[in-house]
Image 1 (cartoon, rainbow, N blue to C red):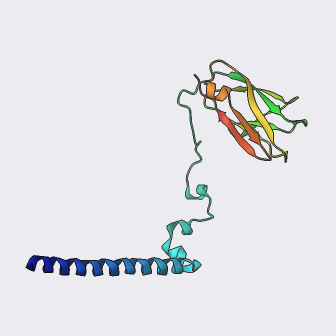
Image 2: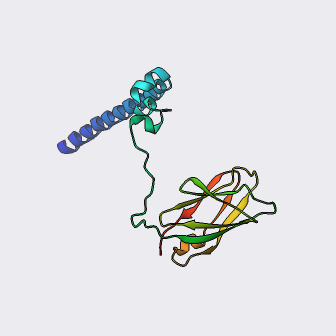
Length: 165
């Protein structure tokens, strides 16, 4: 009986303490959110806000490719890309590693690629959707790329990476 009263009193005190602690954290959260709306204070409290708008290269970082293929060699593979559209697409470009490499001729582009190359389709000149797909591919290229397709609508779209099978 004595233990039960002691335990009930202890749990009641603990319950009140936890309730007050939760209430304090809630108030602290509300106050911190209000304080973060002030731009002058936010720059001191948020590390991300201090570097917002500053380019990554200003911190002395070298530009490195996002992906490198370890077995890079000078093998060349061929791909034939086709564009499905009703209109001519002479200004549709194929970018290899973000550099302009090929143009489409009669809705078709024959390109040479190496393992590790990134293939993108630059359709910025067109404000309508153009479906581009791999029509033919060298047998050494992974099947995922040989079945790749993308729709560009005034954007640059990633078609895929060249990986040896």
